[in-house]
Image (cartoon, rainbow, N blue to C red; front, top):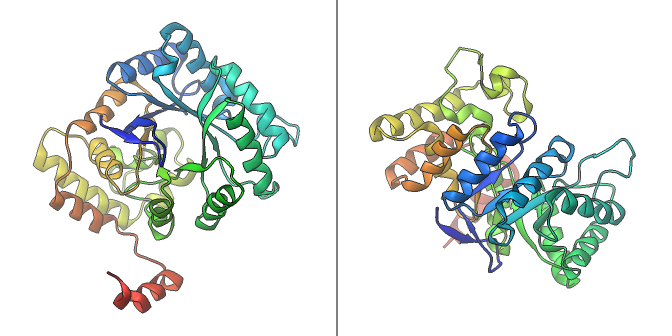
Length: 338
C-alpha cells in the first residue's frame, strides 16, 4: 500500500483503509482482532469506525485491541457521529450537546485520548451547520480531535460546510466519505470536482457495491447462501432488485474480461483498483467480514489497471449525466473548456 495525504493535511494514510462496520455483527471480537493484526502487519495505518456500528461495539472491539497491541500513535483512527444511539431524541444528530457528549463516549470505547478524524456521519437538517462546525472546532482546539470530516453530504451541503469553516476560521473539513464504486458513480456529477477544488480527500465506502462487484452473483440467479445479498436480498442501497439491471451485468462482463485476461486477480481486486486510483481519493474503505476477504482485498495494492482496462471499465460503468442541469451545462460550455 502506498501512502497518501489525508485530504489537504500533512497526515499520511495508506491507500486502503480498514472499515469495521462488520465488527460485532458479522465478525466476532476474536476474528476482528485477527483482521486488525493482519491489516497493520501488512502496513495499513488507517482504521474507520462509527459510534452507531452495533451501538458502539465496533469501537469497543478496536479499543480492546489497542490495549493489547499498544500501537495507538502509529495509527490514524476515524469515527463518526450523527445517527441515533438511544431512544432520547437528543441522543442523535449534530447538535453541540450531542457531539460534546458522544465524543467522550467514543473516546472511552476506543480507549484513546484523541480521535484522528471525527466525521459527521450524515447531514442533519435540524441543527444549524454553524453550531456543528463550532462544536467540532472546539474539540480540535481541546486536542480531543485532530481533523474534521463529513460523510453522505450533497454538493451544496459540502460546499457550504467548507466555506463556513473557512470564513469563520473553524477547523476545515478535510475529508468526504461517499459511496463510490463502479455501480455508483453519481458523485462524479458534482462532488468529485468540488473535492478536487477544495482539497478535500475522498474516502469511498462500499467500493465493492455491497458484494455485487465480487463476482459472486450471476445473471438471472437470485443470490443465496453465505453472501450479503443472500442473507438479505433487500439490503440497503444495493438491494438485489435495484441492482439487477443490464448496466450492472455490463459492468460485471467488463470485469470478467480483466480477470480472465490477467488470470491471477479477483473481481474484488479489480473493483478496488479502479476506485482507489480515481482522482481525489485519499483512501478506500474496505468492508471485510473475514481474514480471507482482507487478504484478497489487500492484494489489490500489488498491481494496477492499465489504461485500456480502465477505459473499458469506465465505459461499461458510465451512468451518464442527467439532461438538466448537467447535460445542459456541458453542452453550453463545451467551447469554453480547456
